[in-house]
Length: 377
Image (cartoon, rainbow, N blue to C red; front, side):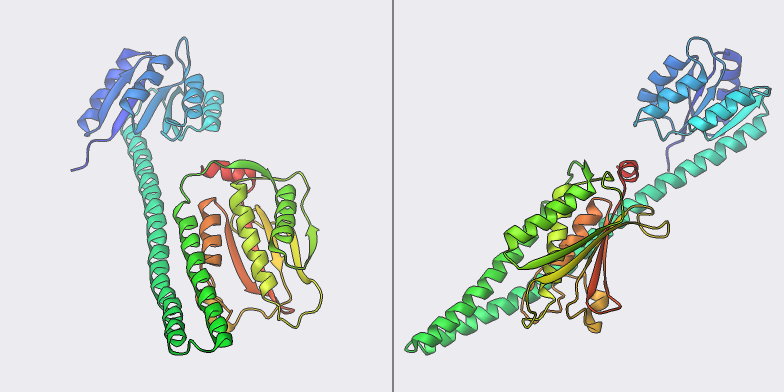
């Protein structure tokens, strides 16, 4: 059986408070009383009500100031407030609704209407909580699905890589007399071992993604740093062609290192999409833009990374973010795009990869603006 829902009644008139208590208790609600704004704030901390009935006109601290204090505190900001007001208090009602109150009831009290409004708001509050619980469960399911897919992919790829190692060790044992052959087979074993090590490192990176503090980050500076880091550390002859369609001052609220690592992986994918016959530096086009209201997150920031390489084979297009899926013909390519999507979603962002109409591939990193991300935390 569910515990009774809790209502805090706040009014400086004892008769009104007693009336509310008698009617609401009769209908199965648990009721606490407060007679001024300061007492209300104290009771909220200890009682943790599901709903507050708050009189507007009170001495010392009126209902408007009390509501403002409640909405400033994260612990009480989401508790619905219904104002109790005189019929003539239109200005106060509008002011209260602007502060975040969900409804109001007028004096003299119509208790049938009052109970109906209370029941409606408590129902909405319960739906809100269930929705939050469902979102958390969906996050768990998504995380479990990723873990399951990763586990399956690990078993398959490690078996393949270990098969390469074991097979070539047996060949070495069978033909130890040919130095050139030994050298070639030892090189293949070394590459397979390096891929095993890389898979383990990528798994560690995914496992370590716990709660991380976000920082207000300039998107222009972040992009410049990512391009410079890739050029310097990757030792790959690359030509970045950058087009910025947003002001240089735009800020996003994210974990900068995660975004830079994600961009680095997407740059590497773009670079590797070119064939060995490509002459000169490989071109990577980078464009920043404002996301439309239909995109997710709406009106956020998009970073497009485009190449003129071989594109995405049709057979893997819909599975591009699954672990170990790759257009490259190597065993055990790893978790690159899986980690990119996992990391960006962990910080309220996302990524998509699509074939580009004129050839090649375009990846879009989507990040919320600073104010939008802060509302999700």
